[in-house]
Amino acid sequence: MSRRAWPTLMIAIALTGCASGGDQVAVPTTSETLRTGTSPHTTAPPVSATASTSSAPAPATETIATGLTVPWGLAFLPDGTALVTLRDQGEVLHVAEGARSVSVGRVPGVVPGGEGGLLGIAVSPTFASDRAVFVYFTSADDNRVMRMSFDGAVLRPGRVIVEGIRKAGNHNGGRLAFGPDGYLYIATGDAGQRTPAQDKGSLSGKILRVDADGSPAPGNPFPGSRVWSLGHRNVQGMAWDKAGAMYASEFGQNTWDELNRIQAGRNYGWPNVEGIAHRSGFVDPIAQWATRDASPSGIAVGADGAVYMAALRGQSLWRIPLDGNGETGTPKRLLQGRYGRLRTVVSAPDGRLWLITSNTFRGTPRPGDDRILALRLPVH
Image 1 (cartoon, rainbow, N blue to C red):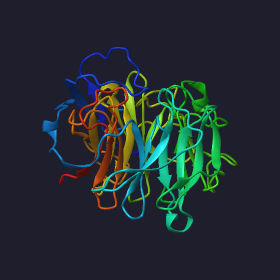
Image 2 (tube, one colour):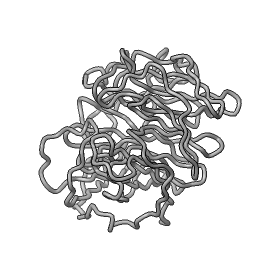
Image 3 (tube, rainbow, N blue to C red):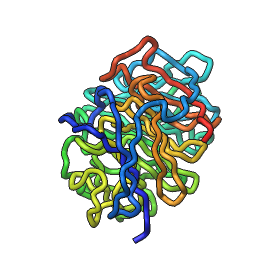
Image 4 (cartoon, rainbow, N blue to C red):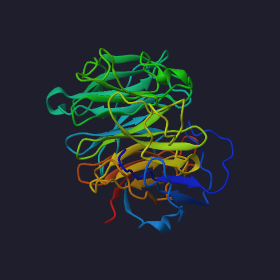
């Protein structure tokens, strides 16, 4: 078996009760222990690390937009402006730096409730010719994906291309992203029903891969199926590195939140395992966090090649370095407590990261919340 590092952030005091599966209110953090294994079956002596912004340079941020109510998804247009979803209002904003955010339309059929509503958004990689925008939302009956069109001023409804994704008050997944292969990836949650995550016939607890009309994409691992990977509890972040490797963040239950390297047809364990388990047939995460330090939502791969992970309960942006071989270096915590809960992080065309806060839902709103921020990456 190849040698591999397994970064693990472990809380040094006992955890108390509350599951991480939803968007938790923050709990103050004391300290953690970092454990790095030299192989999947050995563990090196622990190294103490303090979870504070003093452990990493404080990155410079700029304010893009303020006064938003429960913003959720963000996708860039070719001109560098962005489309942003408002979960409970079922509305999409057009956001440009230095300009007032403008509503470009509502998505018909959105029925918000709990963690459901208008969630992820993705812009077609061939937007210049097809003007296509895709949204993930909770309807009266299910979670679904709709293809829409945007002419630069108005977002117009189109056809539902995927439906029948189980809905619930939480664990709705909801992130959309186009991969480097040009196909649309859809992150779904288990909707509070554990066993369907292991059922290849269910769309729950999966990452799906489809073409622009919602059909299973060519090369999917299971013939005739949209399923790309299974055994997920609640994926809300997906991103790819320059080599095309895919990564996803995942909410754990009571113990471990995860960052996974996603491969076609692989099983990531839920509900049989949570976190690193060394169980045959299941893929272990490449990094894991005590739930109080993360509750991870969106992720992005920055211009520096590291994964950046937005943490809700952990009120931080985690930087996880990658070495290009599927192994990670020591994660560092950025912006701890500075802006509260962080929902989304997206790599901007100019190399910055755009962040969305999530304090108007299960948080403590501050003046100007919720907001979109641009972060200039620190030099490493």
